[in-house]
Image (cartoon, rainbow, N blue to C red; front, side, top):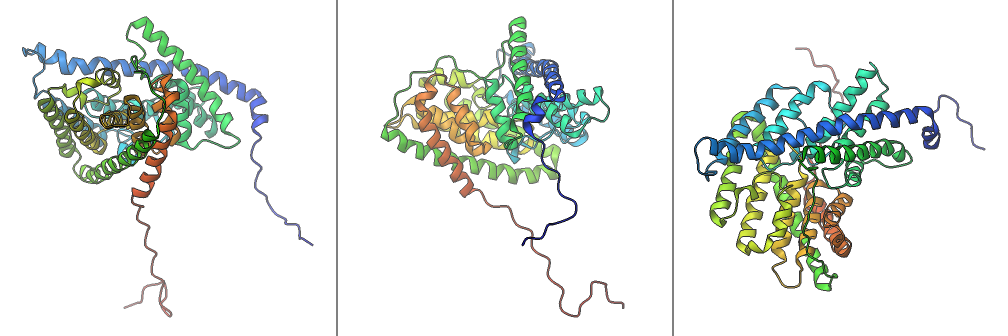
Length: 456
């Protein structure tokens, strides 16, 4: 007969249905909607600032100094200055400049308000001066930090769960339109944070509401200012053909190739980061010069614009696909090499997100493979994006959605190929990535030895 246990028992988890029906949850939804408005407006302002400063530094500034266009060597001084500003921000301001990009994409909790200036300045210096990182990670941190700070202004000591949910809602609102769809941004945060289980809807619904409000704010501000929505989009996607047996074979090749390239990029970036952390300022400047040198070498070797290598690649994807026929096999090979190495250098020293550079490197590699027999352009383009995203982000579901939703209706046609490439890349990355070293166990004391030191 079993014996009844006595004593304190662990509290039962809250019932999600009861929470959804409560007045407190309705208030939480209202706060999420209200927070989504200023946070999305601030995110739009940040993207607009970056979008204005990039051409100002690379086009308007050299012309105002008397040059006839942008000199080929112009990225060298700009990226050196960007490295100085980024390093000084990381070293002297709280928050370490935000998330360390070489550690992969992670959705951590909202930063403290005191860390927001450092995150903003480090991201601005990285993105505006041409380093190869994207705005998504800084936007997530800034959106979550602004939302959590607004909650603390309303109530001095809010419950920890309320701050976490509203901070996540701020992150949802900040990236609501960046990836082309608020739903895709929601999937990104869900998979990156491991959100699941019975409580998923309780946390997800406020975030979706904030993302929807944020998308409307982006559209409204983009129309009112004439600046656009800064949303990832392709406007001229060729028609996709039905998958063939040969293309399924190419999915295996592209998935494995992306895993090899991506693991190599991250391995080198992590090892470079150890040297950067020892001498932050000179090392970041050197890495900036490396990025500039790669861009200049690519431009001189191919006759293409250095901006193919500079920046995250977010705005370059659309014209790159549209004018893909102008890139020879040699130019595409050099682009993958230079963009990949510049991406690696930026990961190890600068601050920003890893999503868009991974997509661009994968897209260039996929188009390169499409020059071989048996692989169509759209299939190679989509599989390259999905496979490289899976390797660099470690998020297989988001990687499939990034590659298929981006190309619109053609994404349904190539989705089976993208799924195979993503799965192969994800599994191969797990097999190729070295396991972290386990701590060595402390030796057990020998018999007769006490824990206290012997008196001399």
